[in-house]
Amino acid sequence: MTALTFTLKKELSHSLDCSRLTAAVLADKSIAEIKAMTLEAHHTVADWFTVSGSDASHIVFKDTNQHLSYIGKQMQNGTITIEGDCGDFLGQSMKGGTIICKGNAGDRAGDKMRRGILLIEGNAGDYCASSLMAGTLGVLGATGSHLGYSMKRGTLLLAKSPTEQITWVDCGIHTLPFLKLLFKSFANFDTQFAKLTSTRAQRWMGDISGIGKAEILLLNQD
Amino acid sequence: MNVQKNGVQIDDTFAEAFNMRGTRVLITAQNLKWAYNAANAMTGFATSVIGCGVEAGIECELTEDETPDGRPGVSILMFAMGSKVLMQQLEARMGQCILTCPTAAAFSGLASEDQISLGKNLRYFGDGNQISKLLPDADGNNQRYWRIPVMDGEFITQETTGMVRAIGGGNFLVLGESQSQVLAACEAAIIAMKKLPNVIMPFPGGVVRSGSKVGSKYPKMFASTNDAFCPTLKGGVKTELDMGIESVMEIVIDGLTFDDIALSMKVGIEAACSLGADSGIKRISAGNYGGKLGPYLFKLHKILGA
Image (cartoon, each protein chain N blue to C red):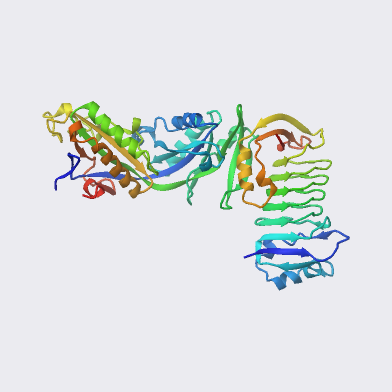
């Protein structure tokens, strides 16, 4: 089976809510049924996307842009690959599975995420990992302001230094063998994250305005 | 039928073995030295279920490519008479031997439907600072790991490991003209047997000298010395030994399956016999209870293809 693929047909000038395009919703639907699904008022999936493939456990978005929002919202399993940029609220409240964004993500990526792996190969916007409860969110590019705002538990893995934030406590630099386990799990996917090797990382705990059990790990690039 | 191997007589008898529950744990560390430190502690005082609760041993070494965290390690097998004891002993030994050992980590070594706690309860040592990670393995199945902050960094353990039905008590006896000759034959056997997967020989160095029989003249003792195989009692008790036998030692094997134990016994007996009758090894026998107690009978002649 080939991945269920959504290719954006035309330029979007407004935010399009893609939250219904997850494995749980699409699993038992035919291509025709998927095309007929309503994405927003007066518009169906077919109005915005060409649809191909059949494997709903692996969903691919192509020719994407920053207006595709809520991709992977509440997803529970499977893999979503975005072969470009995406909009706000990527992986909001996701409960499992893996999302790989090969471009940049908008604001509030991983908002209220509970479980799973969310990997952004480009930049992430403001409020990345806001209110994240558990799981792993990785960003290879730059991150915006208010990183990990109200983040409760979980891991935020960074390759580039974040801006300093007063509600995150510096725990120093450590060698963490756990990272080998994490990188090994990335090897299951077609992502730049699978190339990570450094087990040396700077660790922050936060957000101490809340329970403060989350962590930011900044990988040493040496 | 008179069966000999290299001039060593193989008795027409059998080893009698029992149902057990078994598990496998992979121990990794910064290097093999510390993996062994952890594994030796975890499998220490685990020679016999009679007094130790479990029987455990190191199965084999693991390269970096064979472990979940890419560090060198060892695989250990642990056996008990029931699942409850196995779970209790595993948790206790994890807490006292692996959690405490610098750089050591523990992972599941068995995939099975029955799962028992590895670090599931040990995580509370983190006092609220423990971190759970649910990560897909190479097959895409999610595995839960715990990261527990400790003074050397982090202790990493998988949440559970598999438990399977297993067999304990496979054995054979090496009978010879002197203690040193019998021990040399047993050492040769253990070297050969340690190359096989899915089995352990839980006694010190893999060899036991104090084989036992059921019961005793003392009411409180439920096992006592196997006087029929004690060389110094020849003539004084009903003996299994002729006058030329001066020493007897036993190798006990626990394994995951009947075939694993049978192969291990075959390889061990052949290695012991390879020294030959000229080196003082006279007989190979086995311990049993007349076939009335254990459901598994390992017949020596059949195992050796005689």
